[in-house]
Image (cartoon, rainbow, N blue to C red; front, side):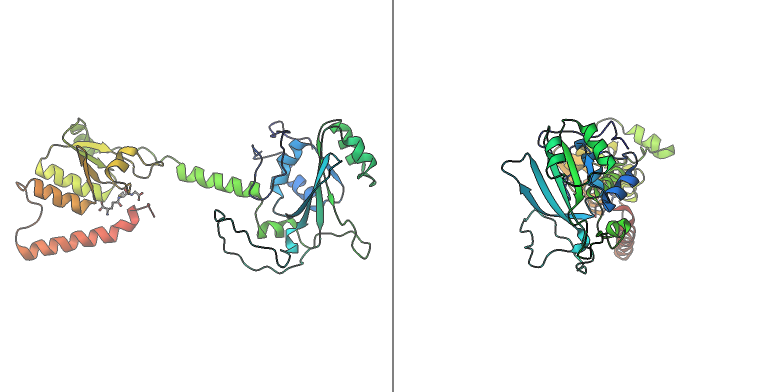
Length: 338
Ligand SMILES: N[C@@H](CCC(=O)N[C@@H](CS)C(=O)NCC(=O)O)C(=O)O
């Protein structure tokens, strides 16, 4: 299992990926990911990894372990970080983060001590292979580990191993659950990053270009040139259509601008006219107005040669009631601004 060629490697200032902290570049589909995840979960043998391998694969299992402490040595060229299996739970009395920038999450209380696996992750500087082999590595190294040391030669490397390989009964301590159980409790930072990326991609998917067609297209083309009034509209939008019909009925001069209000980021032209980012909106010089019923009233005040409402008061009231009904009934299906 050799590391992917695209793996990020920034040996200067290399930090172990922790929850929420990702390496500079994440390898999205590293080869043999499932085997690596299982290997890092079981940790049956001492694993010796290059910085590339660590950066590539550890972010995919950092949900399994939670960091407990870090030990730095004055004389040795290594740093050791101790982790417990997350199923061990938070030790009683662990102070909660007071970071105001930290997102508050709904936490469900989990049972504690569901697993006793402890691991240590040690970062060795370049040239420390001999130190590891003779010192801390006094362990009987598997052939695989020896092979890894030979491969790493004099470069920096990471050693991941169980900190309590055997329990009080002398038997090897194993996770008392599966990797899938760990994933169900918390996703790894790489998984979370990938999910957020996919979510963003879906949100930013450019909506297909809507263009008014048929008679609407012909009307839009007729009003393509600049005029005193600019009408920002989406041809699919019933609220825009309502204003458009009034503009046409009254024969007013306007420039038609087709705007897709769901595009992210919202077009600046739209935001300038309506900071809520909804169509329709109209602008006249540096004045702008939004909300279709309000625009309709403005148009009515501007030009009463063709009236929009019946003049008979009761009929006018009926008409307003239906306008209000249609607005409130259809609005939820067209508003995505949350
Ligand atoms: N109450 C508004 C509703 C306008 C509206 O919901 N427009 C939709 C398009 S039909 C829109 O711009 N949606 C974009 C969004 O929700 O972000 C009006 O009557 O003008």
